[in-house]
Image 1 (cartoon, rainbow, N blue to C red):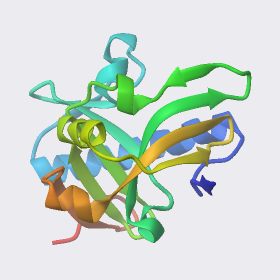
Image 2 (image 1 turned 180 degrees about the horizontal axis):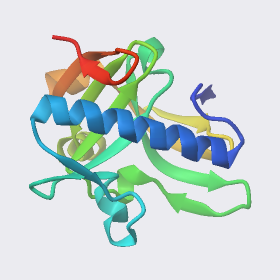
Image 3 (image 1 turned 60 degrees about the vertical axis):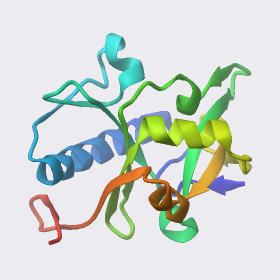
Length: 172
């Protein structure tokens, strides 16, 4: 079982970590795309289209992955088993994003994946199933390597970034 080093059993902490990741991703996406983004994470009608929308209405969902630098794999959430016994479909099944944004804060990389292509890969592949303890739930999913995502055209953009003390900037 793997754990995402950025998350704990404390739900309030996890929300804070997610919000930080979303803000970092928003700054970086605006630099990569020269587009403006707005947060829609708290708007119920946008739940399935992501955390951020660009000016064209494309949805971007942000994932803060604390172990991608070690594994080289993208974890795709299929099912959540909550501590209270409830079971819900994960974002791989119910997400309708245009793009999945993965933030690696250890190596300071951002990856932008075409979510529709990622879903096609998921549906057609033999799945490597694994689980992650996220503190408030146990998440089942499958892994796909970044290398394979690049080869299949799933990764549409990626960049290294740095923190200048005031803001996050893409490294040219």
